[in-house]
Length: 209
Image (cartoon, rainbow, N blue to C red; front, side, top):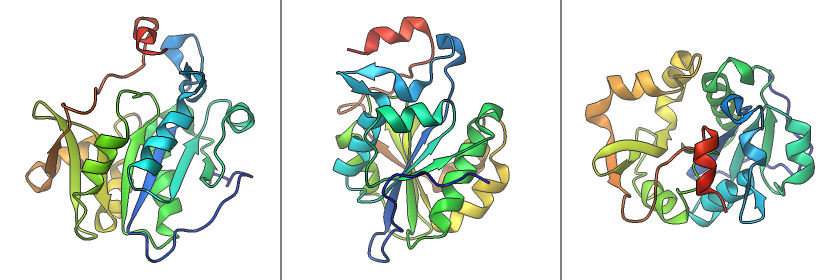
């Protein structure tokens, strides 16, 4: 089981329907083993930018799942007020981090999770706020769209969490679940306020400043 971090942690209050869930465990294999959470953008680690986007986009509570060099991330990044989790199985793929995050949220009063990836610095507050605005009930299912193509952030109402967790294996995360429920997803166009590139390779580092 992932262990809770030593940062300030507090359960989601019953009045907070949508909690942010940041998946930040990747080891950056194609980046020479540099953890993505610690890549520098505008002078600070990427993980801080993602947390800020979630908070300023309307998620008062944020859970962060760490993996590669978790202790170094805790030391260098300001994650105060977040619920910080270690995923010891991070090397097996994003699915285990998604399961860990949803398990953490299931112990709180959150009724939906707004999921972001740490390696997408082009997705900021505006996109988070738009997708969060699609929440209506624990059965909500929504995602950002970029010129009509589904991307992140993704919002999962709590009714979906058990099935998503059951299918979250390897690097697939919630891909199979979303594919099977395509007709139920509210797409929220965000191409005018965000860019959905990933920081996966050395060439992608050009996006960082």
